[in-house]
Image (cartoon, rainbow, N blue to C red; front, side, top):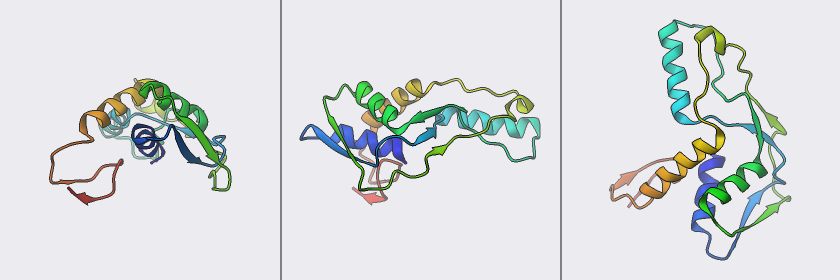
Amino acid sequence: MVIPSMIKKFDECKNGKIDLWGDGSPIRDFIYSEDVARGMLKVVEKGYTKPINLGSGTGFSIKFLAETIRKILNKDVKINWDTSKPSGDKVRLMSVNNYEKINFSINFSLEEGLKKTIEWYLSNKNSSDSWRYNSFTEFEKK
């Protein structure tokens, strides 16, 4: 949920500053949703029945993620890292050792996936649907 939360915070920022939890140092593994969907289809097509991680296998700091989102949105926003709040686990990185068994590789870099996600968000944030639920909002009735 960190990506949609950050996108929304940067987009809705009115005072030139956002607060993010922790110090930005934790490392996370991010993968774009289209790559996950393709990976799931590969697992089924290949009949692979063992557990498999669908991740990029590459770690990025939360700070790098925030700076990349800020850059893509072209926002002049100061980030206040609230170190009184928890940062979470230091590292969450997926092992992608089983990818060769299903002939899978990711197609989207972190930045490409973020650009597509931000594009979707900006196009849909004012949707006229009477009911909606997505990672950017809680279940709400408009």
